[in-house]
Image (cartoon, rainbow, N blue to C red; front, side, top):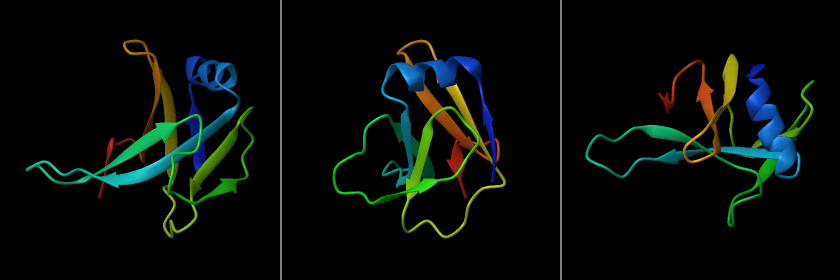
Length: 94
């Protein structure tokens, strides 16, 4: 898996403790689909494994995730200030 991390995202993750947790969640709306969620602290009730990477922060993905993306894009958004991830360039995972 190749990581594409923007400088603002790396700085934001560092400010919030240096760890990023990424997981897949089902959208319960009528549109359906699966989305990526992120947090800088582990969400309750989920198990993660650390992914070796050359980034300045620790990256964690779900322990049960069997298929990794070719690329994981990590970017920062300004309003509200948060980290977002894109799996192979998409916000929605198929």
